[in-house]
Length: 248
Image (cartoon, rainbow, N blue to C red):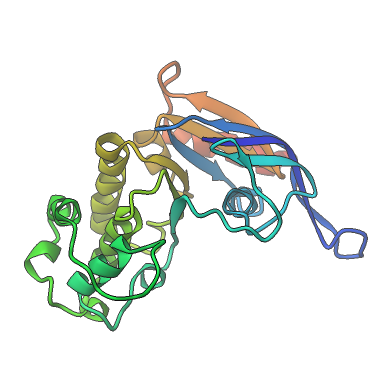
């Protein structure tokens, strides 16, 4: 599904502001996997995500998605992304129902409204946030957790092969975070969607996903297969803390 081969990314190459964001990164994500990426600020997590979506071209190395090499300025079209800000994944001035209708038409010409996919309603219902009972409600009136739940359901309404999550629970309260992570896990397990997720919450990394990737200074320094090794939040925090201590 995702293959990075010796990927290096250098920003402002050849200038005084040169920064190496990724260093010889090798990564393989199989179809259907749920991979969690953790690391301190500046570890290279966001740059890795930008490489996957085609927003950033590797200075060296290659990135392949479903066997295809991403070319310069070609944004990856077979996936969806949900970011930290719930408002970025929805149309605030439209109703829940209208948001779902438009999301289902991703990749098709025109912005005319279609119909709501029953699968989307079931996913909303599974969140237990009351969204399926208020389909005519304007999205701007929803809570942060409700908005992010809607954004998640919208993101998978077009049946993407890959779902990219960039700290999608970071701005939510604990209860909403729990609901959104349960939805995330459900999307992976019931729809078979491959998930690549960045988080700073080590308890989430412990509880969810089948593989944890630890990044530090632009490199992948650990890969933990949960089927072979138990992962604890305290362990991950210690790994990241020790890396920071070693570099200061």
